[in-house]
Amino acid sequence: MTSIYNDAGQNVACTVVEAGPCVVTQRFEQDKDGYSALQLAFDEAKVKNTTKPMLGHFKKAGTTPKRKVVEFRDFDLVEKQPGDTVRVEEIFEEGDIVHAVGVSKGRGFQGVVKRHGFGGVNDATHGQHNRQRAPGSIGAASYPARVFKGMRMAGRMGGQRVKIKNLEVLKIFPEKNLILIKGAIPGHKGAYVILEK
Amino acid sequence: MDPIKFVQQELAREMNYPEFRAGDNVAVSYKIIEGNKERIQVFRGDVIQIRGEGATRTFTVRKMSGNVAVERIFPFASPAIQEIKVLKRGKVRRARLFYLRDRVGKKARIKERKRIK
Image: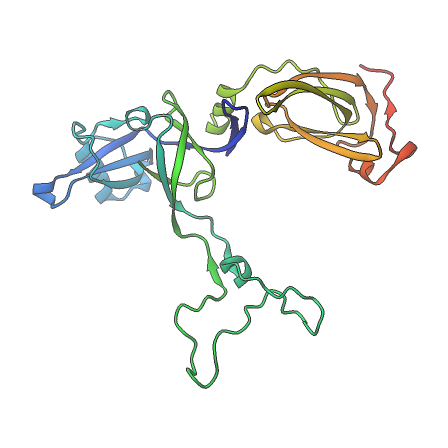
């Protein structure tokens, strides 16, 4: 992340995303496959790190192995055939509204205060002893005599697929395939994200 | 090249500010907008820290306003800054002068650096 100044002189936090060049690896047609979609691949991979089935797939598309392959439903770049590259400026424009999909940062095993926003116990005195971040009651007693499913408890947090909607494209650098997106997006530095328009 | 560095380089403004460090006494002229009027205000005080890098580099200026201390953080890249003047060079032994916050009066002074290389 970095920050830029808008025309009003305000400091705006933004994320730099390298969004291409992507290569079309497969087309899915409505009459042949039952739905229409475009499969895009991004980021060069070593041949030795690519499985043989995938190598064949990339060879068929006439491109080098890539690390990330994603299908986009009802993508309307009709003229693109397998092997063609898609560049940032062909899809995005400054001022566009996009959704960012990524895997959020893993937080490990977290308690209920951080994971679910519970209040915890606000008092350190009045008889409280080492339970300031405890979850409290998790249900009634002999009826229902069980804990309901979906009860919010401590556990693994983060590392999940998250979509952040309605982010603004602030700027585009076609020469480097970079996009500046307003605000934060899911994932750690260098993580893969999917941008939907 | 690192994409973030590239973006910062691309969008960097030209900054002709004099060099200064923590302990120096500076006067920062910056634009403020009141309603629809613009005017320039000067904030004069001691630099107590410089932090960050690239487009997010900032410096903190501390001054006494009457008997209330005021600290203001300025980003170097801010377009509101018109001018920075270095009035005094301070002689200090650390980069972050947070100890000044606990001091008042004569103890909160910074010695002047006389010999400047």
